[in-house]
Image (cartoon, rainbow, N blue to C red; front, side):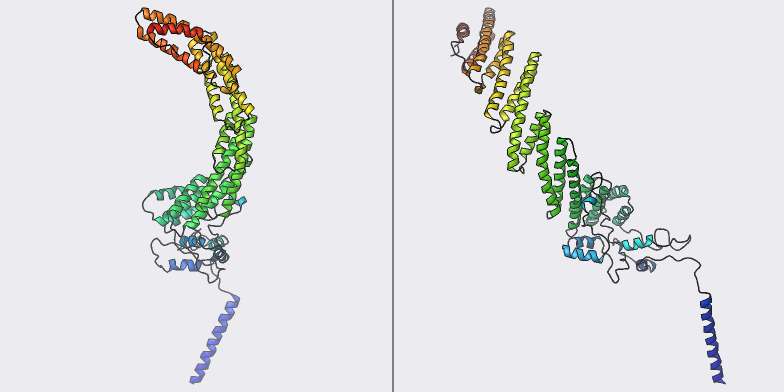
Length: 521
């Protein structure tokens, strides 16, 4: 009886299992709602949150790596990522083969580094976020849309923790392309006292990346320099590479702009700005071969720009501007010797042309009655003549310029003598006798009006002195006689012969004797 019961029970169980199998084939179980396809690594990322696992305060969230890297460790946070950048190139290449995210130190090709407006493009991701899971983000883009009321919220898996630190919050803004907010919030955080040294370096770096993306290279450079100064020693090579990449991109963009610039002065200034960028980049990354090569090319382009600018300015007769530009080039200690010789010749030619312009302008102003302006032009021309390099001007050209200056001062003195302005004529005529290279014949042309001026001055002073003595103003009369004696001595010192001054000296001697003074020797 017992065996029969067991057999019946087993038969009933087998029939039940057979019935369930048939039902499963005919009517398979199906969920009422479509289930989303989870991104690779999502379960491992959400598991700590679902289990309520606690996370240490201030510790970055470590996201899972893409599913295709089976068995690989999670992506490192920014600290380990920046340390990885400082490793040798072989280890960095091996790390790139194992991991999909781009390292911060990788440099784009020159065509991708600079934007159309000359601003280098920002790197793909900020250092604070490259330890995340880009593979998971890419997988989420391919998921099937969830039905309303489905698990979680749109754009974030249910239970996924948000940014836990200020750096991660600002980094999320960067990832979303909200660069102005990155600058604003990052700057506000940096202005406070609640940010540690390591977080301060990362925030400065994010601000630099945002400013770079906004087309503000100067602000980006300043931010990267702050990040470099604040970062721990292990993280500095990463920020140095960011700064070097920015400097290289800006330097190349400025050199391209200078090549197409039509204004010679602007071209020189643009090349100099490119050199400054490249030098700043090398200061941060001294071993960067690309920066050094670009800097050598920029310096060679600078000397070409100076030469082209000097030629263009001379063609426009802008000799003062050309002289200033060439003087700037010669003041640069890095100017090659061959270039220095060529620049000195051009500088002398520009100074010669400017002196010629000034002397001609002085004569014209004299004819217009603007004697003060004429005298100022002559003084400026004489200053340039004294500054012109002796080996840059041929002897004949130097003599010609000296004659121009002599004639300008002589012409002004003759004009004043003709107007019987005796005392005012003395200064330019005596000055003209100081140009020794013009020869004795031309000096005679100056001495004749000078003698006339002295004779006229003695006659005028004699009448005045007699009147003052008659009025008892002895001291004032003596002052006039002393000035007269000074003028006569200056003429004798300048080579005027005593016999030529015989009449003037004779009348002056009587005045000196009347006052009891010694006449000029």
